[in-house]
Image 1: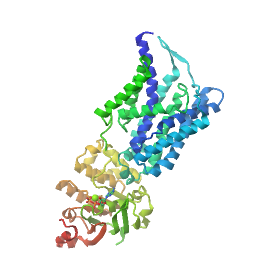
Image 2: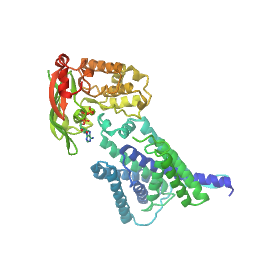
Image 3: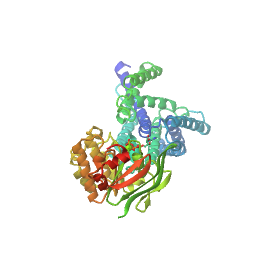
Image 4: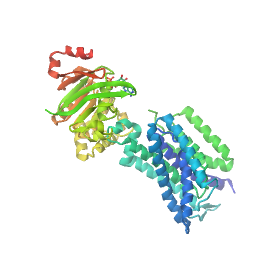
Amino acid sequence: MAFGPYLLLATLEGLVMAAVLALTALGLSLVFGVMRVVNVAHGEFFMLGAVLAWWVSSLVSGNPAIGFLLALIVSPLIVGAVALVSERLVLRRLDYKPEATIVATIGLLYIIQQLVLTFYGPEARPVVAPFDFRIRLPWFGYSSYKLAVIAASILLVLATWFVLTRTKIGLVMRATQYDGEIAQAFGVPVDRVYAGVFALGAMLAAVAAVLIVPIQQAHYLMGLDPLLLSFIVVIIGGLGSLRGTVVAAVLIGLSDGIISVFFSPTLAKIIATSFVALVLVFRPQGLFGAETR
Amino acid sequence: MTAALTLENVDCFYGNVQVLRGFSLELMQGEVLCLLGRNGAGKTTALKAIMGLVPPRSGRIMLGETDLTRLTAHQVPQAGVAYVPQGRRLFAELTVAENIEIGLMTRKKGKATRESVLDLFPVLRERLKQRSGTLSGGEQQMLAMARALCLEPQVLLLDEPTEGLMPSMIARIRETVAALRERGVSTILVEQRVDAVLPVADRVAFIENGQNRDTLDVERLRADPDLVHRYVGVG
Ligand SMILES: Nc1ncnc2c1ncn2[C@@H]1O[C@H](COP(=O)(O)OP(=O)(O)OP(=O)(O)O)[C@@H](O)[C@H]1O
Ligand SMILES: [Mg+2]
């Protein structure tokens, strides 16, 4: 294949990665932005979303699209419920103290991982894509499903942006983010907002995972990469900045896709991590972050 | 005259440090009660106790028949108490309009309230789309008051609203407080400086070390300004 088409292919692969990464990182960024909680278990919510997607779709026989669509609805809901329960039982009781919540979410990471290992096992299992005809490009054929992942992710990011900036719920979330104490003095039930945001963050990761399982199989250790990459994206983009998160996800996803295709995935990770170091040195608040309070 | 708000023997702590010690206060219907005290006397803490932001360990805070200490912090404003915090504490990243919207949402007030509040502070009307953190100090204070008035509160708590403002702006704030009294709003006004409150207060309560000292009619202070020195040591 000539260089041009090869680059196009790498870019498409990078965009798929960016799409999933943007959703996952958005969840992490929301939780940190509003609650100031660093959720180390975020990747496990992603993994749980993928594993549940396999489970739900395995319950349905017949057209794979039905199982997949069911998974796309049920899996994020269950993950959201798990997050809600962990928030009520653990984070709230720790009063959202930063150090304590880091340790607690590390614990949550291992609990979820071991439970999945016990009940789902160590195998990697695929979910059949709802559709997968190849789109003929002049130089190569490309999976229509992968393009659909990109489109779905764009829609979801836009929906999140709309909710945050154009609705009353979003306004309440932003007010809580800037000053939780004063938000309470204006009738905002801050601890319910926290619970909702934590669940929403986990659900975004779960949706991303459901979208990716037809491409990458469900496995109980699959949460690590999304966690690290989400942290990278959130740091580069600026904590709590929606725009920054999306821009950084595209940047990291694309560079990862392109460098992985032309060189090696390890080099891609090295470059991403060095970029984080550079951002931390020269622009600690991130590319789009406001100065910290 | 009936009391709009009563604090009875309120004890408040930060961790193990007691800040309010058996603090009591009575705010009459439709009056402006000024709370005076030195730095660190516990004035802000008293207001936060009313708002449920620093829940009292003991004592009662009655708003009419409602015991506010039994409500959670977000229910207190819904009961009709509005708070203008020290240092304004606007949602700085949000626009003027969004700050006002938050105020309106507290007690589900609508367009009519919004219009009447904006009529009180016409400057804000021209700046609805501006990020509130970029307003001037005086404008920020007006927005903080506007946001609170969006609750159409029975009781208004003002924590040092004149801090860092020039005299003409202080006069504006004073006029607003007086206008609200005409509408029957009861106000607790926390201040450092007596001269800022003498023109507008009905009574003055002194707080020292988290305990309340005398409460005086403002006429007595006007007649004998030296009294203030006895209580707060500054004029
Ligand atoms: N969040 C907090 N944690 C611990 N101690 C606090 C806290 N807030 C206030 N304090 C302490 O409580 C005491 C009373 O503080 P408060 O803010 O109520 O004083 P104030 O009368 O409003 O003073 P100022 O006029 O300077 O605003 C002070 O000694 C202060 O150090
Ligand atoms: Mg104070």
